[in-house]
Length: 389
Image (cartoon, rainbow, N blue to C red; front, side, top):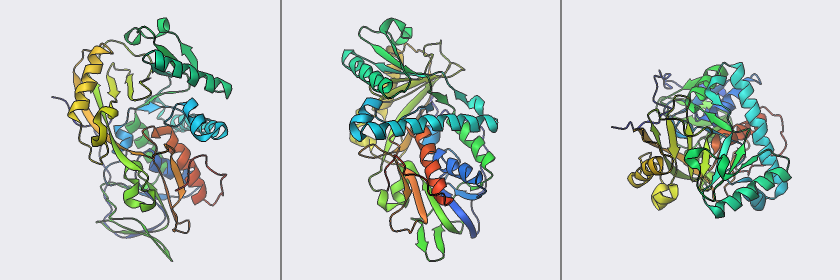
């Protein structure tokens, strides 16, 4: 019998108390995933203590139900980024995520959480001759703009992935992360007052004297509010209606023989897998098979997708270990697919938001959080390469 909880969340955890009284604060952050906790951390470095509210537990939403990838760039491959947004903006986004990776690793080292990261590189796999040509274009675009990446020809691919006509692209700066352990360590280190099990009743209301947030346990009055919700962003920020919730399915296995030395993106990122130090294999993908049913905010798994994932483990990766965990996570997708961050229109700068990471949020959320935290602190940062709300 497989567990229906995320592998990352399947560990002992004592949640903090919910909000049980009215309170006032300088900054209130709604959402305790990587985006919200990063904002709280970055504000703490500026001497600003935040109050954080989450409907469940720290890292229990998309952050704790992800593939555990720690990768640079946006959702599209880099050559596609250049076609969509222009070479200059694409390079700025990619460079910003590379910088964020280094900053996050330095923070993890400082707070004793570096062990939760594995920087072994990531392999983008071209699964057939057509995608192999796309991989070559991806590599060429990276090289033209001064970013690292190494082509891996068919005979150099891991044995489990080797097929005629296949090609890989290894990006050495990428890797994997245990998202829950890292984010929860960061939450503690931030010193923020975190109220778990505290669901916000509706959109924050900007008033003359600040922003009012209603919950079942009490009302929060804050000078500034940051909404960091990703898939649930539009529920609290109506202006973010362009972010649609989408479910992504994943599985994890018992320990298996070594098959994947690096996290792997396959079929243009539709499938993503990695093997953990204990031998477990995690695999997600086939959201295209889910079709219209994938556009939901309900974390129920899709039976057809789960069956296809199990088949992929056996037939494509050669993994025979039993599936121990099956789960779904809800993430935010925007049509263009560019994250948003910044002030919410009509709030006079008192409500800010970040989200819409299109399934690749761990590093992008840190970039967005840096921008938002700087605005909250009154630092007037330069324009973000991401879109505004």
